[in-house]
Length: 410
Image 1 (spheres, helix red, strand yellow):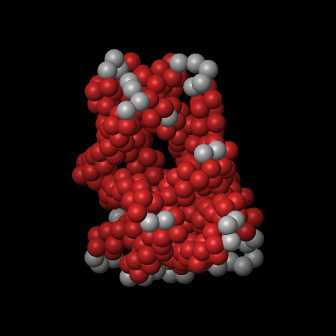
Image 2: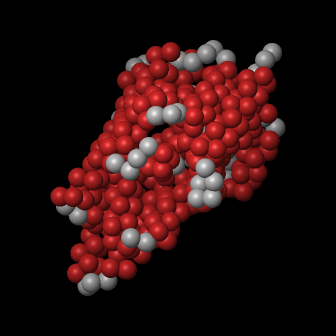
Image 3: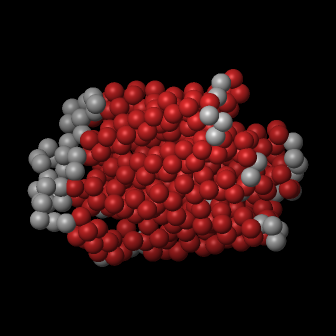
């Protein structure tokens, strides 16, 4: 395909735009609910609604990504999410004007669940598109570019959400996602995404999974599970990735709690952690986009896991906040290396006609193991030292990385 670099960058930028809007709305809703209720149960319910629907629908979304036109799926889900969000924008004045605060919360809850379903349908298609528009030798680099875009957007979105809620209202925060979705869809319309046959990349109409009406939806799901079970490499990547997300919770997602308890409660401590984590993930994306990882992708994956584990241990042993921040910076780099390597391994090794389903399982693993990790390690942190939890989880990740490295030896 001519001009494949321009085509690929255009696709990644379009997805970064929609990610920015989605993250702004997600954070604005959580913060709004927190301020309005000050109740942990409401925050917990909204958090569950942000992940559980995605977990439930992701594998089905992967089946659709293998059966139907992936470009249509990506644009269609973006459009539906934007329409639902815009509908909520129109509805808010009537609910607030009637004085039904709880009704507004329930309406936002339904909207969050619908948006999560949309993300579960869209994500497998997005990750399955890249191998069809970029050469296999360039996948690691462009996954690194994508990781950089995502880190920048996820860093900018909290600031945008905070400004909108400070100077406007939750209603107008919703409009951000509508605008960014319109921009992202407009850009994606100009991206050339070839339809995929079961033989590989190409412009022909799919002959099996996408157009064979005799194949049922559940048959495709069964074939996807059977395919993963018969592929030791892909099965190992999915299992290890799930464990990685689960074990990264103490040092990653509970970082603010750890800093608050260990170093101090000043806001600048928490701000510094967020900034350093952002620079680490951005640096990791830049590193992968320029270096491209080892030729042996499994070695890159194993190295990221082992480094991630070592740095978690280092943060647990850090005697002062500055050393902790140094470890956090490298931790962000290791996080991006691991996630980029896992994505590239699947893109390079899964059959093209199965990639939607495999990425559906990968998305499900993230949406499942993150809340499980929070549910396990959050309460555990109230009963024992977080240092011990971080060090133990880091050691386990290091051992997993060593095991993966040994399994890659020829």
